[in-house]
Image (cartoon, rainbow, N blue to C red):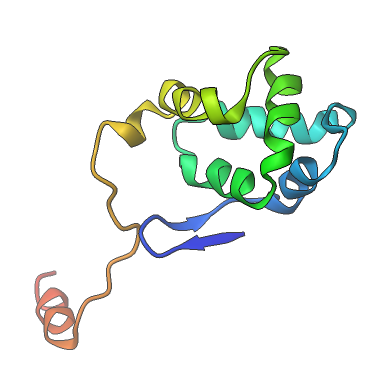
Amino acid sequence: MIYDEVEGLIYRDLGRLDALFADATPARDRAALAQLNEYLRDESVSPLAIRRLVQRHPDGADPVFRALLRRPGITWSRDGEKLLQRYKKPFFDREPLPAVSVIGGRLAELLRGVR
């Protein structure tokens, strides 16, 4: 899993996707490609997860997305952000909000009294 200080907790089975991006032959792991497809198309999954995978394994991004999308000419450097904007539109239409808010003791006391 990844933890981001702005977006909060992120994602199941990220290790499988990390291995997919690290492998030079991504089309072999159909289950991992299916999971990446789910991450890409699910509007509730932040683009942060995919960006982090690409940052960790930049050489794996092109072959992985070529296999996933069956588009042999796609390159992450040229097409990656457009791809995320297409599939992750809600994340680009708003300012990022923290998933967790830390409150002080006084505010916690006040909130307890408002039941």
